[in-house]
Image (cartoon, rainbow, N blue to C red; front, side, top):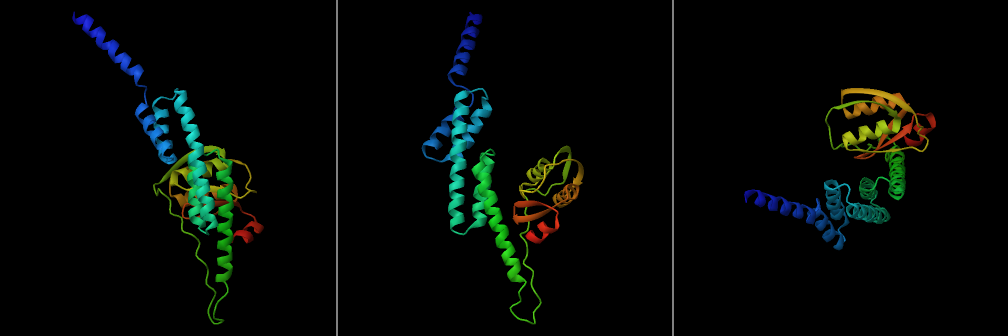
Length: 235
């Protein structure tokens, strides 16, 4: 009799498992958030559901759909902020769009465009600062943005890869977004960084790739080929 009881219990538990797929609670929360057009929250819930059950096709379809919607929403917000003159806020929205959907060409294009506008604004500020209001006063240099990484922990990195991937890896470790001048060349490099700061890591890789780094915002850096004309353009 006890053996039959154990069998029924196992069958019952098996039916429960079939009736409630892994990730179902997160999937349900995602559907609710999607109905409310809270695509950021829906994306997070669908991500959790898909992680719990990677082979669930329904979860994947929903996740991909909401990934597009959430990324598109942040792009639209970024464009609107840029129209209002808030370039820093716009760059932040495009960064969020990129983080949600790294394959989005629109988010990448809009972020680059905005960074160029910020760089141009900084150059104009530099030029204006070089003109003293009083002929007797020395020129004042405009201060570049100060990089504020999300992490200040020591960087340990050993890799041989394309230079952009190396810079991107350092950026991820420090919580920075890295963008590149269109003329920055593809080049394989080998680096071994042991217990170095973010600044030291960027300096080492810059020397290795014959490039220089300019901060655009607190968490966006611009990597540029170290050429005389580029120095004049960006400094």
